[in-house]
Length: 64
Image (cartoon, rainbow, N blue to C red):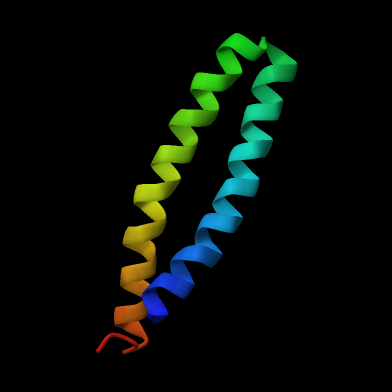
């Protein structure tokens, strides 16, 4: 259960960063290029946040 809580917190932080990257790409180039960049960042955040959440939970002995 702790892993999911940590994961949600990491995803919120990652989504804010992804939104900023997408907005920056839209400002620098175009919306057509910004969408794939945002989606790539979003799906990378899904995977990376899970790995980090598991490592945090294991290091804090929060897993059962």
